[in-house]
Image 1 (cartoon, rainbow, N blue to C red):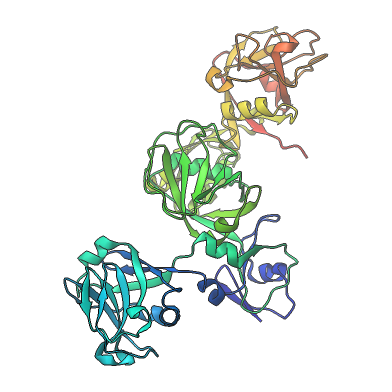
Image 2 (tube, helix red, strand yellow):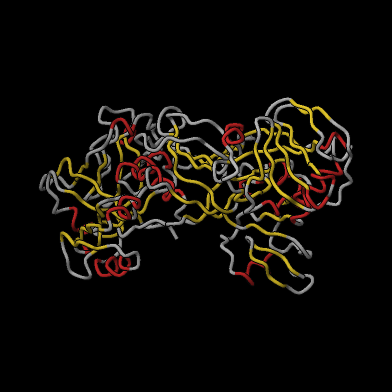
Length: 513
């Protein structure tokens, strides 16, 4: 049997499963994410009533009338692709004609009256071998040799009226394609597990591919951070979009603002819900509060069927350029693959660890064709492990240090005094707003433990680390009830004792096993 996986046809033995198809094609797929199964193109197209005609002047949308002219609609579904690469046959103040095509329809010799925006199948010269698609530009009467069914009217124009007015005989039809609407996909598709058996003609869609916009570098990088593990979880579903909220609360500068067409990926840049990302199922107008991240180029079928709580595999092209946490040598070889020039700074030895790249954003790096990589000695990086018992405080710490966006973050020393056995780092009161007490210590705070001052104290958001055990005060010098414990230093604690006020220290998160 033959099935298609993301548009690639593959022959499989009868009884094969979804997993067999994925393995046979090597399709992009992250375990546990959604797979879309469509029974077949022909069945899908029977549910689609909107078609887009792309011309050299612009696009026209027409909506079929299957209830009024089922016979002519069926003929349209059979022949519409033959219009591609044909010139506009003629134009008059009343009509535009495309063709000729060959049909199996029977002509009539009656005169009929037509309204503006009606689409007619005309058998010129009363011959099915010279069938034309006529778009009515204004009310008029004519003898078109149409089938008697609904005066030959099988569709109406629902978009692109300006294009209709501007078309001339010099224009060419570039393509004609069905517009896949969500209701069509939902009716024809099913979410499956990988052991589901396939049938001949099935289609599978395993991932969503996004083309980022070079004009929104901050927003694109935000999106890259969300899909670092190759998947996204749907946090909200509406008829017109699905939303992803894992990085909500992070504001971005206004960047490219554009129409939110079907397939557009946007980021809310301000206000309630800032940092949320949306993929649109239906067209929506532009708004200043949404930056355009990019557009979905493959896999809208998954966007259409995904529901709240589902996860979808996501790929970006081009993908993220991130040298932070590599050695200078690894970064050099990595960047060479993109044709990007590396400019080493700081410690330039091959085994130095890159802690900062400049420009920080992928789209800026691609535009400039070069990137500065700041290296430091590997043993100067602090390794930390965050405690899941303090989710709000850990989130604040990741935002403060930049660990949300990069593999290595940084802290600036606020207070360090020899013999005090505590070092404190600058916080951000605006980010720490609402940092309620959580995971407060009950007994001795151990050497290497990291804490944050919570909202019960004046210095909210301050970060500190203990260099010796203490039974009374937390790492920021506050009583236990004013301290949220977020984790511990697991590597490099000896470097903390050498820090001075104003120093910058770089931190890397160790994931719990």
